[in-house]
Image (cartoon, rainbow over all chains, first blue to last red):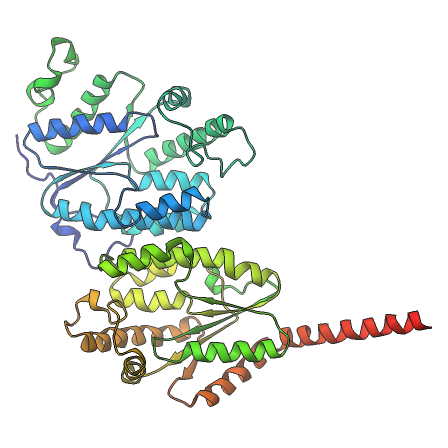
Length: 256
Length: 245
């Protein structure tokens, strides 16, 4: 097993950051995408632990958690003070702050960066709201191209159940800015359907690895590990994929 | 296609003043506003970096010097978008004149001087509408520095471009950084059809020049505004006569 970088250096999605040399970024950027309620957080936690057991240094990064913007975004969401452009720009600013202060330094130091959502979430949300695709793509042109995008995919019915059980419907998550006057539940269903459709298109355009997230947590986790280990050039043995915490006999998938 | 390159279709008119700090552009914008108001035109004034949405974030972040060239650029674009849609376009729709103290060209000059990609920042602002007239107040960096330091004695961190690390000495850094901003403005005058003003001239001379340019370019609009009120007055007088008869 080796922790060497399978490919050295990175590329930007668009015009990039002129003052950052992407060739020095030797870590790996691994993105987990998928709607709310799909179980990203649980899966990420398990992945982190697994990677650390393998000896890899891991840094996690989320969506809209930057020190710079978190408060402003909350403020703007609360009063519905956003229009299409400020909505996209606020999220892009937040993302840029995290990219430059967390992700890039970690990659430079050779860490594996696990990103809970990435620019594709912003793309999907913006496209659903009718933003001009070229403008959005240029806006995020400073983002690094991930090494791997793992997309946790479920159908809208499964998603609705999960979200209703574990979250309160929030104004933006229910897409009520899109459907003023509509019942929150109906608005939510309509909005999430559109989002999933956009994600489906993005998966094709950007070469996501789509993972069926309708299964149990463990099967999903094994799939994720297989993709990551494969990318890193690790052996796909039980010893690598299922050390300790998952190693009950039933855990081994037949193909291993 | 960028909206910045096509004429807008609003009934109002947008006038922009651009230039580095200490170029005197705000003074000139105010004098222009006085003149237009005195002619009976309704004028709305808007300044760079003034929207409530991001003002506090920008202020705090600047205080802690935690902005990168890209986040600096994005925060200002957010502020701009907020003001454009709530404070520039509505008065233009209502047929007013909007005077903007700094516009997207400030971002093109400053952000590029900080090292962001010039095309990226232009595309970022492609939703902005094209001004009817954009004045650029050109001033040598030494004169700008003299005006600023004599007025408040202390250079601000980002204004001096201290984040760029061009020099550890604020005065020296200001000169290097604002020198680059001026170079960027100069390269833009053709690209965006900026009216270059000699900002070393006497205030009154500059203002007269400005007014002449405004008359020349939006004379139709000003006549219509004046003519409109004259006509209304005449119509009222006529109907008054009719009633008297």
